[in-house]
Image (cartoon, rainbow, N blue to C red; front, side, top):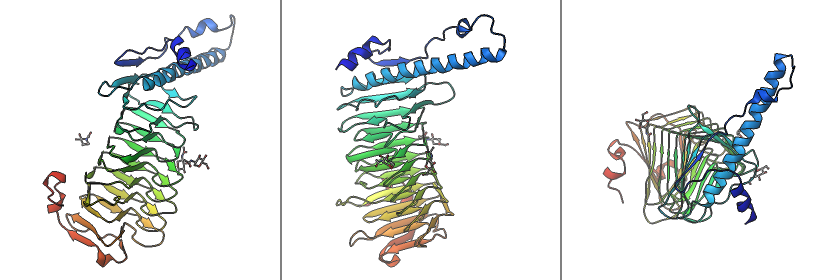
Length: 366
Ligand SMILES: *[C@@H]1O[C@H](CO)[C@@H](O)[C@H](O)[C@H]1NC(C)=O
Ligand SMILES: *[C@@H]1O[C@H](CO)[C@@H](O)[C@H](O)[C@H]1NC(C)=O
Ligand SMILES: CC(=O)N[C@H]1CO[C@H](CO)[C@@H](O)[C@@H]1O
């Protein structure tokens, strides 16, 4: 492709195993001042223009290098580490992550997170094939249109911030076995036209959310922040997270909606030391909706101020998807929750037990 040849002409530094994108060396802004310019304001103005020009140039070089690194990331086990040292505002879509692409993108922008900005026009990391890995660290990913990370790659996200992404779920995993492992990450003010304002997984691969916050995410349909459809034999672990003020505008599960996708084994979901505050759903399950066949374990944590506009389960809705009930245990004791059951709460098994909070290893169900 001609585009790649053109990209090669640009001085983007791409090393086989590591790409370092550093800020272009600042040129001397003052030399551009017209001689005799009197007002200090004039100098400030020109310095501001110069700095804007420089960050645009840096963003453009980084964008080109990022695109090139994605294209070259193919090769199972090889791995490609991209160290980003400047913000990138996309001016066109990045290439699709190739089959078996292994991509690690790490921000190094001092104390703050490096920004990758979709400019309200572009999605960011997209893949259509399984077998790939995408790992993101120390990044702020914002203003993606119709999804920031989507496809069938295994996803590892650490110390990131996802903000003001709109149109589709921010992180969406497709059908198959991709796994997600997301820690110390914040999803705030994101919006999806359909389900899952922040994270959507149709995978049976299992996943982990640790030390994450989901704040003011909105979905038009079910699962204001998180929607998990593909829960399979592999457990889902949510530990030490906060879900606050998320909403399912027309659906169920203001913060979270979980429905296994019809496999033989019951799926286990562990929700440990996690807070659900002020989430809202239209139909039911102001905080969480769980559909059978599911065993959910709420251990520690708090639910408060959640609301289902219908009044059906301000905190929790349990729905029989077939003949099977939903199993839920609370530890240390059932808090005073507003729980609604379909077809009736008596169909479901809600118990008070800490014995079942030991995590997947010590949990002998099946
Ligand atoms: C979401 O809605 C916006 C505005 O109507 C539209 O531009 C966008 O393409 C939609 N995205 C999806 C994934 O449907
Ligand atoms: C989550 O936070 C706790 C305490 O704040 C910390 O000990 C733990 O290492 C964190 N987990 C991860 C995966 O970073
Ligand atoms: C910056 C931005 O787009 N924020 C939006 C995030 O989503 C919420 C809920 O839909 C909107 O209210 C914000 O305007």
